[in-house]
Length: 309
Image (spheres, rainbow, N blue to C red):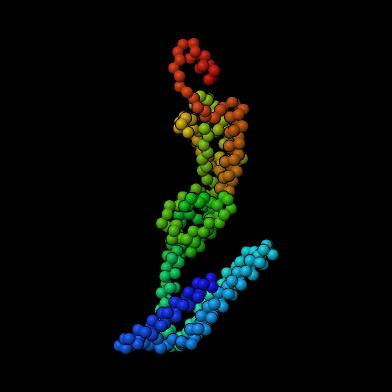
């Protein structure tokens, strides 16, 4: 940190000397000459000392905050917040002191500094203004609302806040994800319930191709219907198909049902899976296994067919 501050001070000094040299070589350039005249040459040395002292102070703040955080672990986050505020205070104070010591403040300096600040602030505020405008559009268009369970950029969870600058989502792992509003408008967002408490949940089960498909389908549907988390006012759909899994064919049973409240989604999936696995074990319905096709005829084929039933 100290080295970076010293580098900035050195660059400032070199820039000032270059400006003075240009002013001496080109007397017909009044603006550069005027800018060189407002430099306090004696103040540059003190500015370099101020920058060095700021680097030492920042190192001291970092060390003392680290020690306090280790000693008072329960207040670690609060200590880190105060450290951040302290750093920003040192930054702004150092810049102010360096400008005051190095330049004679007049209309020219104010115009240069003010123009630079206006450009920097405008550039930094560009994304913020875009996010605010996007937030207003989200309020009116309402692609989702607070309480919706959505999928965005690989994250899945509940919308807990829609602000002017960003949207906050709580994932199922209890992480808080903050997304700028302008990012949401340009990406695809999927809402599972769209303002409703209930939401459709899809659960997939696989069994072997030689197993009793009709019985397995019935057991899956019964397991869903008997769960205490199912929303019975909406239909339960069971879909069946074949799927190639790891170089072998399996029967895929898909259960689509509505959970009565999105907050019970994980509990609903776990409850149905537990019921289905117990029912499959009880009725001896086995998972997919590698089967080899062989050509047999006559009594041998009939005997194997009896075994598979």
